[in-house]
Length: 460
Image 1 (cartoon, rainbow, N blue to C red):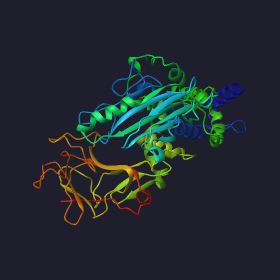
Image 2 (cartoon, rainbow, N blue to C red):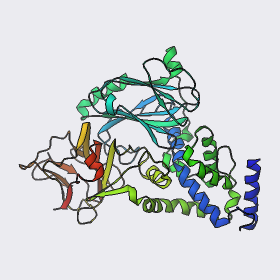
Image 3 (cartoon, helix red, strand yellow):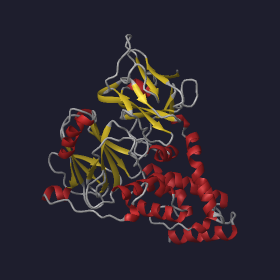
Image 4 (cartoon, one colour):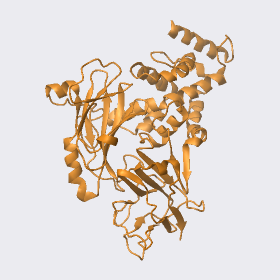
């Protein structure tokens, strides 16, 4: 009956384009509601697209793996790496896309005297758990991820992690101390075990996946390229097994008027004429609009800016959740890592390789981190990829053999040409526009509250 009512409402709207029955929105109000529903549900659709691409393989290889299996990156990113933008060169990734609708998932995290975490995200891109952070950083642990319908027994020795949705994404990050450390990371990857509970108990081999050429692509482009009918049809399907949070009930109730909700039917006729052009204009305007509406969460510190809390634990901040999905999908919670971006120097001028810069840390002011934390400064071209350079150095970090000044301060020389002083403190860039990312993993509180100040960026 609810579906029939929604479709009748849509038909009335289409035929006359105005307000008719009490509670029926006019065309502009309908588009406002469509935009609101799009912002609310875009992370869900992007998660689905990311999962479809990331599991499109017969077996684990090249960082991909079938559903409920682990895919490991085996090389550090270089300027030739073009799979994702702004790749870091600090960690090797492990990716797991899970589906808990039929069974729970066992994850074995090996003991490691280094940073090794599993960030567990639900279908909405909220971080449900950080495995390997806190008290269990160095210990071997076995976790059991359970979906909303799980009713089985928890085997002894496993730590249960409840996931509110059936699908989701786990990003494992293992710090690497350079090419000479890769074998040690491979050994840790080999000790990781990911399999459904049934396979874990039976000891049977992992099943092969499937490969469909049509499912390859860039997840963001796939999600953002859907038209209104395809987009909301997928939303309605995904909501059946991946419910929104209880506090989202008011949003879902409002969306029923346009046929958006678990199991509902969306009819694009409610959008009137010129649907394609208006839909594309709506999507194109979102990044700027969401940046404005989320301004209170974007934290400036010197020439750098980062996305602060509630990143990755969004609550009802739907605009911010969508903005992060567009600009940094899969980002850590701020207390796990912050990603600070600088596109200009201290004078406000755009960074450009025609000039040379000094990135200056005051004495005793290197990024403060907790145990097993680390930091790096990485340069990217205006295409968001790493910059080719003669010494294959893409970042200066706490693992770099840099040289401190006599007073204990640090100068990182950011420029295209080899410095006369040598390469110890050199961060190479190209001869065009670029930007920097200062990544701080396991930051201390003064990073988050702003009492620690970022390095200055001075043109020389």
